[in-house]
Image 1 (cartoon, helix red, strand yellow):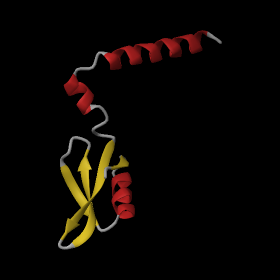
Image 2 (spheres, rainbow, N blue to C red):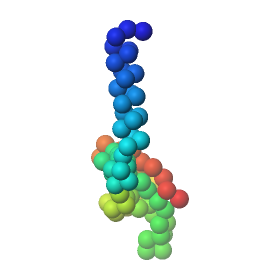
Image 3 (spheres, one colour):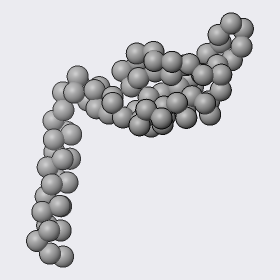
Image 4 (cartoon, rainbow, N blue to C red):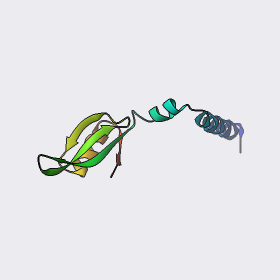
Length: 83
């Protein structure tokens, strides 16, 4: 272990402490620009996948989960499936 390792451990500890002190609103916004979720829906009588921002804002739809996930990744976000 060197001084750099100690500093990193302290930064991680501070990050954990900061997370414990987040307000409900701050926690709800955590990762909103990094994660989008998709969920199955019925559109025009067919199954499709709605794409939503982490805060629930609808941002698109795709005919299947693979295309929905690809669209999310194209926008530099990570997909999460909600079912």
